[in-house]
Image (cartoon, rainbow, N blue to C red):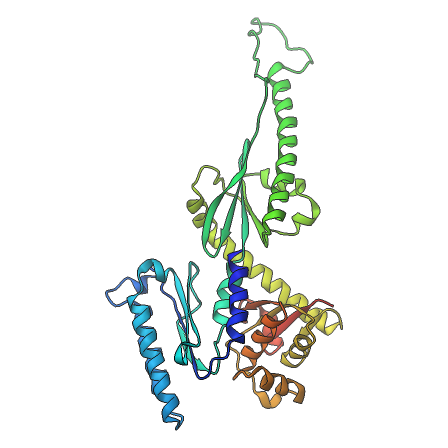
Length: 386
């Protein structure tokens, strides 16, 4: 529920009256990044350069420039004084004139890049990007006789109470029987060993089905956005088939690894690249569907004009934008330019994000490399509610 709480905090943040300029700073503080291993880490250098660039920009408004310089000095002091634990793998800091805005958030997923800017309000898309990539996920670890359900969110993995299921064979025992006398010929019956093995397989199939239902119930109760399974051989396919149909659609991928005996942190680290790939596959698919549906007149919108119009009507379920693509506002229609003015944002992307936050739409930031359909939609796509 942490990420949902953060989204609600962002809604409150963009609604707050800033009464002046707001500084937004994002630092990629990941200690595992080799660039951050030197005495002066790369994030610190990028922070100084970004803040210097902001302070060097003159608009002819001396009072505002003084406020911006103070905000930059406060931000550098605040971030430099933070402990390694407080910085995590990335940090989002928002500071407004006179303390009207003051928000410091630590993430265990790195932001895409170091970034600092000043605007009339908080620039929040980099934070939403991290939140979206860190969506709550159920990690299912399977072996032949045990299944564990873990929770992964924002780069953290933890065990859950009462979420380990063990195969119980009851009073069944393998009975090998006496050795056959030498020289005799085996008959056509089933051996005791085969009979035992068959009964174990039947019991294991029942166990897998019962555990899949229990996992599905737990995932529903916990509100997981997606599931990722790790299992060797054919076990993963059997579990997938045993899942209820509605939960099967949330299974993003099955990884052929046996992680059952690892700690939660070790399992999360082993699955990290697969979680990132699952996110890319999901948003790329959603982008392609949005583009195709828009062309067919269905529940999709492509291009800033159509997406802004749908957001204004509260019809967007999932907004996908490329924040790095610059859109010439002169190419937008009059209704879109008015929507941007009403949102009070300096860019099309921030206006899209603000409207999405206000209407409860999911927001995904992605590059054209991650979602090729964005290149054909001028950086804005949406899946619609209706």
